[in-house]
Amino acid sequence: MVSLLLFNWFFTKPYFTLKVHDMTYFITFAIMMFTSIVTSTLTTKVKRAAEIARERERESNALYQMTNHLTDAEDAEAIARIAVTTTSEVLG
Image (cartoon, rainbow, N blue to C red; front, side, top):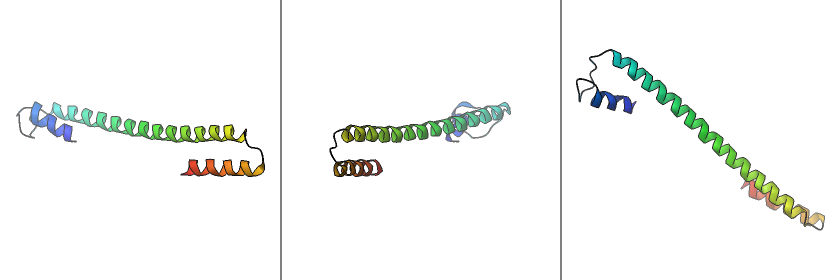
């Protein structure tokens, strides 16, 4: 919305006012608003997907570390300790 107002202020006649004398600028304003909404929506979705990917990476890394530690476990107590430690790291 701010970009639309700035565009109108600086680049449409009469300059340095928010008045619009040429009605074709309304089409330009509509296209600019539509483009900004689509871009904002896509950016939000990409950020959310990146956050989910980081979470999955952290979980996969924890499971990998747990698997490596479990191969060295010698008894049930060691297995339980490794499982608790890994679970607490994943859950924070």
